[in-house]
Length: 129
Image 1 (cartoon, one colour):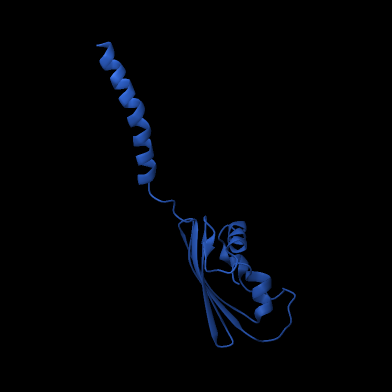
Image 2 (cartoon, rainbow, N blue to C red; image 1 turned 45 degrees about the vertical axis):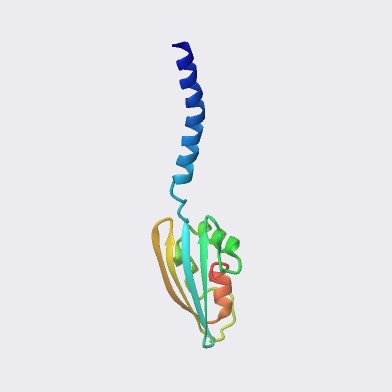
């Protein structure tokens, strides 16, 4: 009987780590904290980027800075809307920005027109390149 108990313990010592590894491999992938599609229209040209966060990636030119800013504002895109008191030249060269996606499962949508690229840079960058 002592030999069979030893055999069971050895089998368990091999099987338990193997089962744990299999469970980790079968676990669902971590969902991204954010995924945004950002479109900027300026001078008849449309540019589009995808920004994903956690992991910070996408075809966005600086996903690390864009995601850092998005996390800083807690996904509140109202904080990047146009405000007239920003020190920028009063030149009318409109830039339209659209952002659609999600941040920690909450939908995000923004459609905003800025008077010129300076306002986009001062208010919406680096989320909007």
